[in-house]
Image 1 (tube, helix red, strand yellow):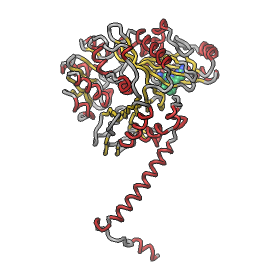
Image 2: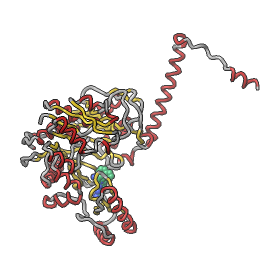
Image 3: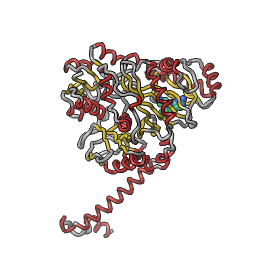
Image 4: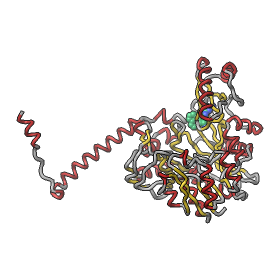
Length: 492
Ligand code: MV4
């Protein structure tokens, strides 16, 4: 592979290109109208314009991207995450054009894209799954029977869903029929596939995922877990590796299950197997993500493995050089996603320009970003500005570094999730490792951010008054004089 086209934008496009450069591989960027001068375009060796700003007219157009690859002579395409990364049809078109798709086979993407097909694939591998159905259900009476046998609350999930899309919790028999009909019609219109199935609803789980690497020669390894429970509305905000709750035995058991899930679909490349962990530390396989994930850096920090480099080597048909026995966990890593969202206003998108943008530096700090000072965050795409990753020999050190790095990160012009990150890092439950996917709902109150902002504004106002008074002579400010309007008012 001599030249890789990165079919993505922002931080992940840069992340992939950096490793490609290190490997002596040329890079091609693609860009939409609004991204004409974006960081990933400036970084690449070549760049091709692929269309207007909306992603449906640019980054989601497989054919335009394929054309760009042919035009530039790229022999590999890396899809990043989001956009076309889990599109089996695109992967097939790339492969058919004689270009290496840096990711799994179209067949593996297709199987794992259907939750029911995934359950079917792993059947013979003894993988623990949440009690429920492994077939599509469309008869409400049958659904009631199933729900009673596993007991309420239950969850209706869309087979074509994933990442929380198309899920409905049902707590009573009386609601089941209506909820099921809604779930089916929603799934039909959102995914073009109305298949839904039923699972027991696990109430306060932790979300733990295992990173795997598989080559085209039958070797599959796991790179331990990432703890992703700190999320709001299925959007992850803080991730870490390792998880504070896994014992070495549990880690090995989950790791082996993840390897088997990868084997079940003949997986190739980097993938992630998602699990739920209940209060009694039972784990259940949820789904497999067939892409490089946003939070992959925490795994890189604790293992020393460059996951993008491994993806590229695997796509070149090379054999994995890392054996399971070579791998161990070294230290602890945390990641905070810095979004252009206002945590004081229910995480509303905060649009604007990065008037000030200064990133934290120093020991144990990594910032993966795709923007620079003076740039606007486009409204067309994901609002993530950057990922702030800190590393230390212990969780305590990584945590203190994260707080220091948040304090050192200076962004003005829009609101970000940085203060929310500070809240998490200083929360006793997070510090103690005592949290579930309900953490944000249970502990976060936007008033905390509002209060902080008010204190800051008051401090800034006092400082402004002080500086004006102190510099009156230098600034040639005249002593205050009553205005004419004021005089007039007095005479009434
Ligand atoms: C569940 C669950 C509880 N019980 N399944 C959401 C994302 C998708 N991958 C599956 N998800 C869940 N499936 C059962 N049977 C709770 C969730 C869930 C969740 C999972 C991972 C991370 C965050 C979550 C937030 C809410 C619900």
